Image (cartoon, rainbow, N blue to C red; front, side):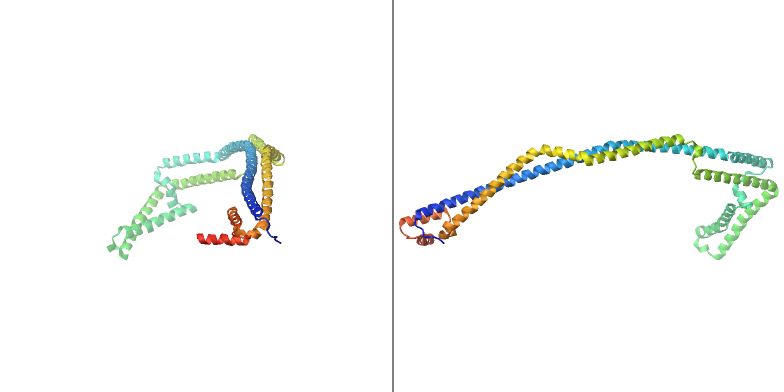
Length: 369
């Protein structure tokens, strides 16, 4: 409960003192808040810098370890590729030599058969046109491929050529069935006659030689087929025992062993770093940064404690001002200027109590307005 004011002069001086002290504490509190914010930011920045240093250092060390072993692994892989390439070339060369050796009798026989056929045709005066594969396909077909050639010949001579003449060369005005029939008749006469004439002439004069030549050509074709079969069989043969590749296999095995060892050592080094070295580096970097961090933590702790004490003192002083003076003066008169104005009014004797002085102050303010 508020008590009557006995000494207004002391009351006013006390109110001004409390207000002045409260304002000073507020100012100090704001300054301490700014200082605490700065110091907290510096401390957090230092901790972030330490973390970034640790992270970058650890990442760099891992990269260095990996790079060291990756260089060795890369070299081993290149050696493996070169050794495998040499082995493949040696195997291919061995296969070629094997194919050459196993097909040699058939190739030599074909050379002899070609020579025999040439001598036969020359001896009996057979023209060169009758020695070709096309001739035998047209006049002595007995294989599937030769019958295909014959069918193609018939299609071209007795279908494609007359249709081409009719549709591409004949003017629009002459494109009638009658002219198409004439073209077919002419085509049959020309190509059919030519086919018959060549066949008759060749068979009448050289039939025995042509038959003998066909037998020789069949033998050559059979030998070629055998050569292809042998070549395919050797190419598909999975066994490599005949190519003397042991030295290459030993070299590749040694390189593979070195490669596996390098990979194993790399993994061991990374595991060692992760389980031991990583913690050692972290501790060292933390230890180096600890004095600075502890200094910042100490300064921040001191400032924070001062801020808490100042805030508490300011709150207490505000409560004191409210309990002892604001309850009489009201919030609007809790300034040093207005308290001085009230004190002057009281000293002039125009007011007998605080309420009269406040009323007098307000009337003066109204008159000035």
